[in-house]
Amino acid sequence: MMEKFRQHFLIVIFGLLLSACQPTLEHNENLIMNQQAYTLYMGEKGIQNFSNYNDGNVDNHPAGVSFRELQFSPPNLGKLTIDNGPNSLLIEHVFSVLGTQYDKNEGIQVLDIDAGLTKEEFNTPEQAYQNYVALMKRINQAGWKNYFFTDAPRIAKEDNIKHLSKSRDVIDPSYIFSFEEWKNIINNIPTKSLGYRLYANGVILDISLKRTAKNERNEEQYMLRFSFQSVRYNERDSIPDSDKMTPDEFEQAFKKRVIENQKYREKEERKAKTEGYHIDEEYTDPDVWPYVK
Image 1: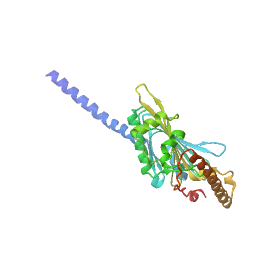
Image 2: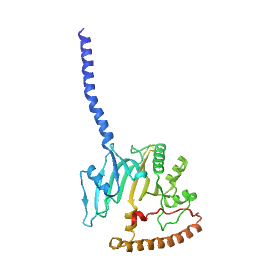
Image 3: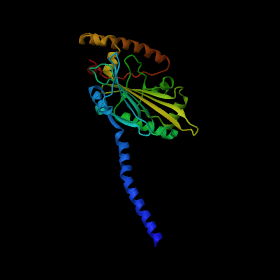
Image 4: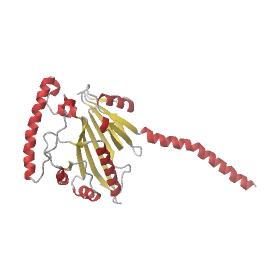
């Protein structure tokens, strides 16, 4: 009788302890899930967001440049949505974000983001590849397109793999490599990395995807770097003393630079043709002037 009482007593106590722990476990799980999700913006709205997320901490430099930062530590990595209107992009497994403001009147002009390709530090080649596929699908669904600077030769998409094997730059983000192509590219490119330059809605996005390590189980580690730049900042920064010009002077300088870059590009395209590359004659530069002026 006494033995049965003890068993019943222990069961009741265990149940009470389990019930007491359960809300705490659920609270912690929800906290981990919710506290790491952020939405970031370029421009003035970006300043407000960083102030909410990092308690207004700003690193100001004498030259007038200011930096705002977010840091995440495993296993609670960040999950960011970069709000760019219809071209908003989700980025997962984020380690750090650096928002840079070069001009006090322009808000956040550059966002640099370091992230992992996968949640775990190391993964099988197959899992790393699946995460690459998921990333490229999100990029394409968000409407980001390949972007050539005005002085860069417009290499045709049919030479995509040939071009990246020498430069690591992918010129056709809409094409997702097969697993065999992926393995061959990563294993044979000296840099073990791929680079993308994309554009959408007044923002230039540079992406670097790099295999950084392999372990004894042949599992792989990949790092991602996203750099979002406002096209306004990028173009104005390319013209010396643009901040000292009147609107008319800047417009003339902008047009002059476009013509000079076009001449340089045509020379580079003639060179590329002699090397066996095809030129995309149908590529049209996005109209960036409304954002730049």
